Image (tube, rainbow, N blue to C red; front, side, top):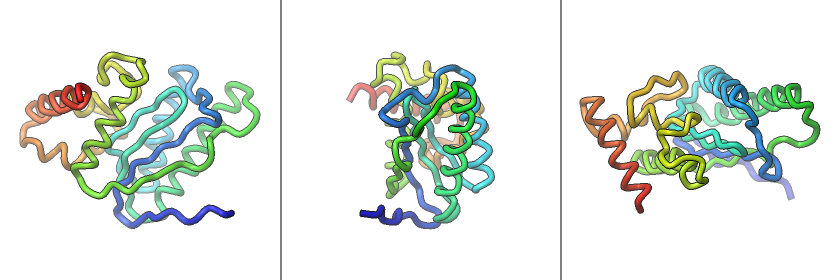
Length: 184
């Protein structure tokens, strides 16, 4: 039975995931993460997608994004996944299917859920026991929110921006929210 079309709308907020085939590792070395981040920045910019939160795990990726139009996500993900696959194939002499099916996307209904999705994504390395704190993981967006670290990929989450007019206060509040989220 053929796959149905995605239910995506112009200006939608989405939670996006994609996994390596059979849960295989898609990032073997730091250079792989760096190349993926550069590709993500390139294609998000090119396809007019705002990336609010991300986490690059060894065998999968998580993103929360706002798309400009309903075609932009598919275009960006196609370019991103294909370009990264070519990098991986060349670097590691990889043969076979790389991604496990097409990427998954779920509509985010409101800005509060956007922040919750961001917390979930950034806490992923803690749940996987890769780090004790999300901010210790180099390949996620947590430090942009918790400490104001500049990341060219990130467009700050509008709900996060509404926490306070002062950036240091927002960062402190985000760290507290993350600690409560992890404790729950």
